[in-house]
Length: 277
Image 1 (cartoon, rainbow, N blue to C red):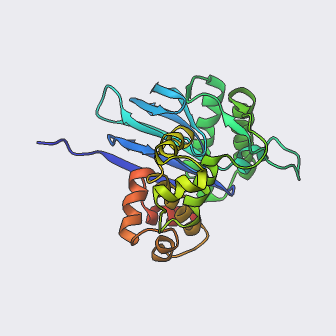
Image 2 (cartoon, rainbow, N blue to C red; image 1 turned 120 degrees about the vertical axis):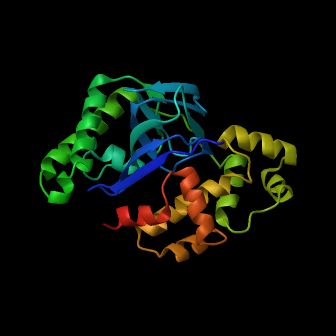
């Protein structure tokens, strides 16, 4: 008899645009996927194994974990049936705002350097942030300054100790960027591999190989991730679930729900409740 899957997930909004939290306890094996935001998390119990472009890593209770936007990774429990962790997801502007003067422009080349690491000071700051945001304080409407200070402390420590600026080439978009942009143009109707090869000026095999190297997934799988990212944005802006599914290229709302659960761990309905509260 197959073991029953354990999966509990809570998603919560924060006072800052572009930032949300999750609490997850799960035995689920997450397939290869990516997020359109930065992620910083804490393993609270158990252990976790993940493969990404930065290598295969193992994280144990007390370790911090991070992801960059568009970084393909998977995830599974290690040594026990399940693991428990908390994450804060934030876009680049939200992450950098606490360390920039008003009016400064976020740096698009920012990357978090380590997928798993130990930093007692950052761990304590993150635990304090979770306590303020998930412990009922926000629902009582108090301690606004304490929340802002906790968020600034997390961002400042993360950027000072565990971030860097990636080197990005100048000039026209590289062939695989053109392929990616073409895939993003119409998420409902993906082009053929032959069309993508013509666009890139390469053979079909070269497109397939180089796209996986550049973006971590084959061309047919990349739009699946982008549909979830687009739907999440639309729902946060107030779109109905059925409308968001259609506008993001899903066959229907149930298709979107399955994709959310597989990639993010929570449903579109849970995200809507958190984002619009």
